[in-house]
Amino acid sequence: MIAVIAIAFASIIWYRNQKNKKFYETNVRSLQEITSDSPNQKEWKNQLGFYVYPLQPEDMPDERRLTEITNSNVLACINDLVTEAFQAGNAAANVVKANNQTLYQIIIPPWAKLAKSQDMDRAFRVYYHGANGIKAHVNIKPVNTAADIVANSVASAMGVASIVVGQYYMAQISAEMNKISADISKIKDFQDNEYKSRVLALVAQIQKMAEFKADILDNDELRTSEIANLNNLEQECIQLLGQANLTIVEISKKNALNYAEYEKQLYEVQSWFMYQKTLVKVLFQIAELKHALHLGKVSRKQCNTLLYTYLEQSKDAMSQLESWHMAHIGEFGINLKERKRKRVGLESFIYNIIARINEEKKYRPISDETAKKIVAQINGYDITQKINGIDLYQEDVKIIVKDGKAYYFPQEMAQ
Image 1 (spheres, rainbow, N blue to C red):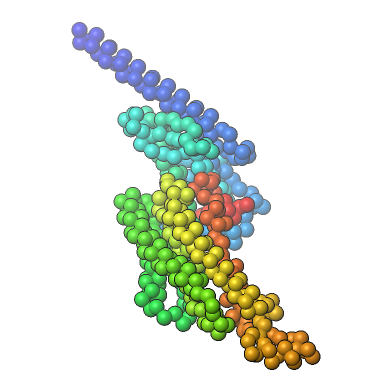
Image 2 (image 1 turned 45 degrees about the vertical axis):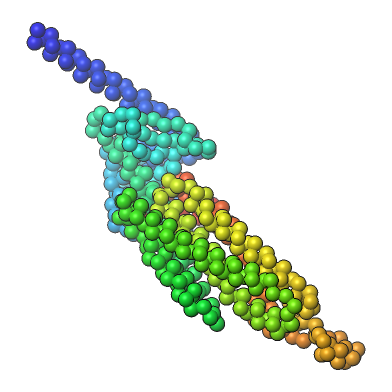
């Protein structure tokens, strides 16, 4: 009886191992089939869903177009990723290793997103994203050492991709916030010091949050806390922007002005116009930072929800300001190109007599500064192109390794 029980028990174990092996092989083949439509036919792809292959020196992009990856944590992840690719028997990686090459490229497609499977114990679910969302998915369950490498490598690849893109986004945001801070210092003769101090404080806080920290991007709890803080800053930003918009609209309602009064209002609205423009840019950077902290798991469109609303409000305010300017340009006969305006009232009567000899006497000059402010406020600004830019989380993540240094080659620069 003991022998029969032992044989039965061994049979059950053998059957389960065969079943797991078959399941694993089937799903790996499915994953390969799913990702086999890559347009990059020259790349050597391993079964892990990412690529490592030698790069010829003549194919090396201009280093000025690359962003060096300097964070030690990210570099360690890249090193681990390539090491795991060696262990998994990736053909391209083995060629690199055998030839002792120091120039190669890693491409991590955006197709696979790794998550714990709810269906199976110790399994991972790999998603393939198509144009209209999730197109297909497979489960991969580690059953031996090689399978562990598969799961770990996919996880590492996706982790590296997210952090590299996040680092790039945050570097861009930090640079933009530095420009915005410099622009605020150029706003002169502004009477509302409380408002200005609130704007400066807002910008300073976002600048601090935009400093790249790999430990934050790699820690869900820390990222969640940062996103919550960012949501509070977003509320502060829209309040300040709303105040600027309302003030611009109020000034745009002032009519029956003489030229001196119009010019005075022009200079007053200029400061509010500059703050409005600045705060719209800040609101966009907040949306970008939220997208970066979410590691692309929340779409840019969703992150931009409040931006779209307040951008429309800002456009309405600017439309009213433009109409206000056009009415006064017509009333005062302003020629922005030639920097002059018609004389009015008694002055016009007197100079009309002189103008019979010299036509130009009908006009008097306006300052370059006044003309530039009118033109700037009429033309406004447009950030639509930035809003509709490429979402790098949805593109291949290209990492180039050269002489011990790693570089990110963003898709927006590759085009």
